Length: 542
Image (cartoon, rainbow, N blue to C red; front, side):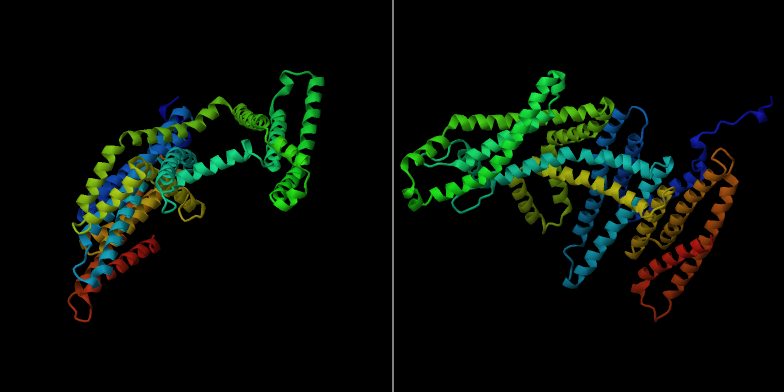
């Protein structure tokens, strides 16, 4: 058999996007985002964006692994924190640095312009983040509905541990330190008093007074929980048929007692209210009144009923947990607990570095803020740290970071579900859209050279179009087929249209500065309009 007649192995990877078109998308996006970041001094946000992009890509790859899913899901949950820290930290860094440079403005009228400058720079940082996320996810084609759903099932359980720690620590600070009145009572003392009052009401009511309603409530709780517990236990494993029938009859009797006690509780409340009236109590035979007092003040009986209730509730919880474990395989159970363990690991690591972390964040923010705002910030931050404690503050921040990751994954999935993003070429679409937004807003600020501005606009379409065309070729002829010449011709046509439109726009811009009826301050806005026109023109001429 000749070599040309050898059968070709075809698998699922054969129909992926071609390497050449994918490489164009990644290289164009990487180069132009780096140039824009250097021109606007946004290298730190761009580095944070790449960290978030690589964390998201690695998390998607691990969450969709068909083998070794237990360690893969655990490692994917560990990547949730760097993804959120990089995404939120990059945007926050841009806002603080640019805000410190713009505020306070030299004149009161410049407040609006300064605020718009900060917003524009933050939008540029968000565009760069979106672009690099799209470029990174284009390589493996991992941003799919299935992949995002798998990652969402990892990120959501990861949020449980930091959110629980933040809730407990914040509640402890509020309960222990928040004063309710000028007398010094706090939420903690009020809650302790409420618990003592409830315990006294059920276990040791005031002496000399009948308390029929609390005794009936305890009896009702004991009968109901005992009936439910007997129904949840696997009695057939240790009892014969006659004994099981006897237990069933006993459960029926308990249910009847529960219904009777429901009505008796209403009667008990009415009797307790009547016996508080001295006139009614005076008409009652004293021996009957003493019997009521003695019968409702038996603390051993109340303790026994309370013990039955608590014990039955514990058995119900254990029975529910065992049945849930029995219904799931050990592998599925470990896969489900992997993200929970990852969240606990992240929370424990945050606890371990709370002190140095708070100090470094405080120092970085103080260094970035203008001197006029530094004393106010230090006063507010020290007050918050003193009241809630550094551990509560860091766990709240960790919860917000992990929650932002959940929100990002959800937003991308919803965008694909609503068809705002293409389900097959999500990576190139994100790369092109992010680069277009970053370049457009950077041009509006006037900080970007004209050639880089138009290069970014044309490059945003090249990034999207090359990725989309690579997907089409991969689906129709396969990535093993030589397609470099076809893709080169397609790229040359796209660039030709973009270059011609850019040349026309640059000519108009140069001519517009020489005529008197054009306001030069409107040129950045005109550049943004020209950029949008070029984008629409290239789309129309494809």
